[in-house]
Image 1 (tube, rainbow, N blue to C red):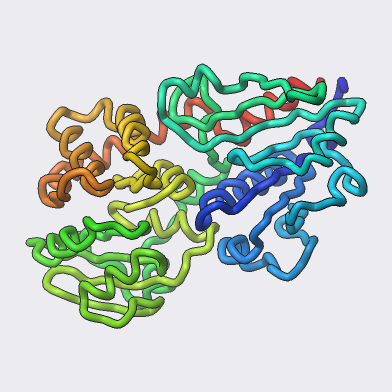
Image 2 (cartoon, helix red, strand yellow; image 1 turned 180 degrees about the vertical axis):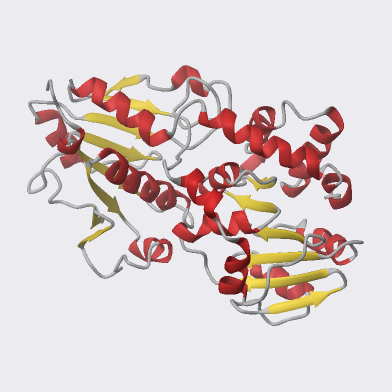
Length: 383
């Protein structure tokens, strides 16, 4: 396969939408980046086009096959045609442990030039990830290997997704224009702390809202419509908190935004002083935003998620002065169910947190971006 140019590489990505938008969010970003920056021919198989449509309104949930932003999108519902009428790609990405159709795997194994087959794992900051990244796994029945590809926050991992143009877009961001367009008001003064809140349901929210209400300085809260909206409504004594809603109590003013489509999410992060994010995709975007953030990791049974949270903190907080680092850890733990949040004890270290956010983005970029790292490895195997 010598001389295999990027433009000739065909890639199939398979994605099952397990919960909300995280899985398809990552796969859609990866698909677009492989197409736009590496010139690959990308086909994305997705089992839930309704969730996909929410992230990308250009996707029609009723179509079995379509194209958006140069990516071919197939509605994946155990396609029996896969492997018979579909051409098998050069690179096959099985996202987050979803199982490829057996007929597709058989066709992969029959291909003279075996595809590079990736199992794209969930992001983890734990140390063991570097040991397992790029390990091959032979198929039990076919003469073909699957390679484990682990996103991560440290050296020796696959890194995380970042588009080449992202920093330039952030630097060109017009905060005042964004506030007028998305919220319908002028941007708050510098005395106001602007907080974006993208979260799962969270028992700690009532305590935090009370602290913001009683804050000695003004708080502006931006809330994309979603799973936390009901708690916001109850706090203000409202029946709901749909897009366009506004509420005020004490020092706190809250503004409900519509569901934020993926290309617009970065601007929400740039518009705020601190961002509350959840899951994987928004966690990654918050790191590139170079603003302080608080992560709500996806909760698992028996608190299995807490070591993963601590592993991320070990990377992100490691160079903070001890008091600031301890405050950050306490606050992240409280937001993830361990202890009670103390906003003033946390935000008093704002300047340290802002500097760390900027420094961390540089450190994270040093390990390369996920799409580029994946593409480089695939090309090395296709030679």
